Image (cartoon, rainbow, N blue to C red; front, side, top):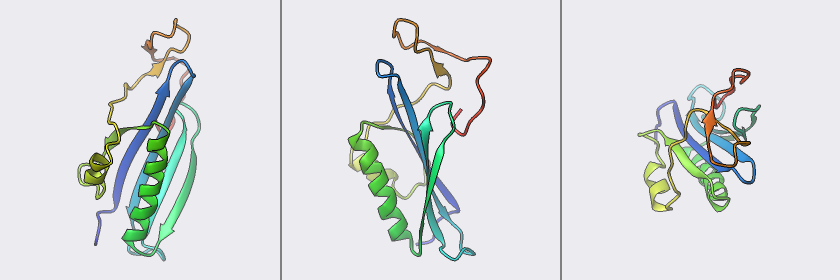
Length: 132
């Protein structure tokens, strides 16, 4: 199966009371000129902070998709939700089949110190990151 060059899934986990706002970005890539044509790059970290990254390389798309499924299953068990899936992602239907919740994220930072109401604001000191 040939894929377009790149597909993205974004996941998030947010709990104001636990002071938790985390995101995952999982990128499935295809580069026919690379030694291993398929890769899955996983970025993760607290929203608004520096992210970490791991890259899984595979010779075929099925191995890459199997790794991607394992990452998503683990995040689902930890109550992550889908905030974005590319329309043409090869696992878009699978995500619906496993019933992982979908939820749109606000594009502003949570105010964690306002009586836990879930209010949001944009800080003037906020530094851009991969997910901001």
